[in-house]
Each structure stands twice: as C-alpha cells, then as structure tokens.
Image (cartoon, rainbow, N blue to C red; front, side, top):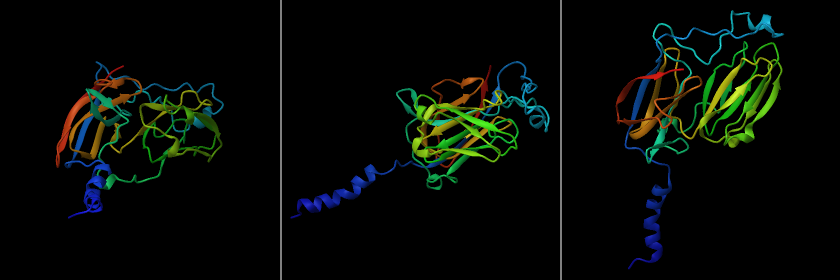
Length: 262
C-alpha cells in the first residue's frame, strides 16, 4: 500500500509542468506590410533648425527630416510602425500577458537596447524592449543633447530629464520597466523637433516596420492571437484591439497589407 508521501512524489512532476512556463503546440512565422492609405504620399518634412545654436552641426549631412511620417514614395511603405502579438481575451488584446516563448528566444540577444543621438535625430526612432532588457540612451554626437523620458501611465517612475554631454549615456534598468500598449516618449529639449518612442513587452514577439513598411515575427507560438499595430502619426492600424490572426505551426503566413493614414 502506498503512503501519502508516495502519492505526493508521483504528483510532483505534474505540478511542476503546470507551474512552469507556458508551452506552444508548434511555432510559426508571420509577416506583412504597412502602407500609407491616403491618396498621395506625404512629402518629407524638414525640421526647423534655423534658430538652433547647433544649426551647423545638425545640417552637416543635409536637412534634418522629421520622423513622424517616413513613407517610401515608391511603394507607400510606412516606416516606424510598432507591430506586436497580444493574447486574445474576451475579444480584446491583452498586451501585458506573457506568451509561450520559443527556446531560441528564451533569452534576448542583448541585455541593453540603445537609442542614440548621432546627428539631431533619435536613432532608432522607435525601439522595443523585453521586460528583461535595459534601456540605454546615448549621445555619440560632439554637441550636447538631453534625453527627456516621459513614462506612460504604468512607467511614471522612469520619467527623467538628463543632460548628455558628448559621449554621455543614461540608463533605465529592466527592473523598473513595465509592459504596456502605449509607448514611453523620448524628447530632446535642446533640439525640440527630436522625438522617439520606447515600447516594453512581456515577450519577444514584436517588430518595427522597415523603410518599405515590412515586418516579420519569427518562431511565434501557434494559435489564435491579436496582431496590434501602432504608428506615431497614424495611431492604431486596423484597430486598438488589433486584428485576430491564426499562426500555423511550421508555416510562414503572409498577412498582406495594412493601411495607416493621417
């Protein structure tokens, strides 16, 4: 006759499985493209740097273009759209929910995600972090900049305004960052046309559209999710709750085109 201790030991592996990280029934890839939905592609907008004391430096590589709307005139591709997967909960997108993570993505490739200010613009303009990554602001220019971080409603404690001398850096540790569907805003008060966006996610399934509007998310868990897209100038692409999609194990699914408009 088995003792209570024996039954407890038999139940232990099952309990460990139930309490461990979520698993997926296979992995797939999705890709797509965000294009400008208006009749005519918006022309690039030049930043007003005439009154800046750093005018000569800022214009050394040509006009400084604003980054809110970067649209490829050849194919209408919209750059700097943040695209991510969210759990579908009662018809809504839960951006804070964890998702099963492919073993190859268990740990991020880099501990720090860097946003630089090499020539009077934030580069990259939009970045995404996992909750285990730190945000690092950098100034590789030969002039002074500052980084004014305006935290969203769940990241108010990271708000800070720090002067960055040439070669200077600032840091926000991962322990202080919380995932949310609204980005944290980055500004430079010395050069008021400069702005950037920092998103934080509880998983690695996010991407920023490239100069042609393309995005791709690899090794995502198979199943039903919501694909959410947010653009600084156009707002929510499709809808705030995203688009319901199904990821198929072992397959790459092209989701086609999505339209962003002013």
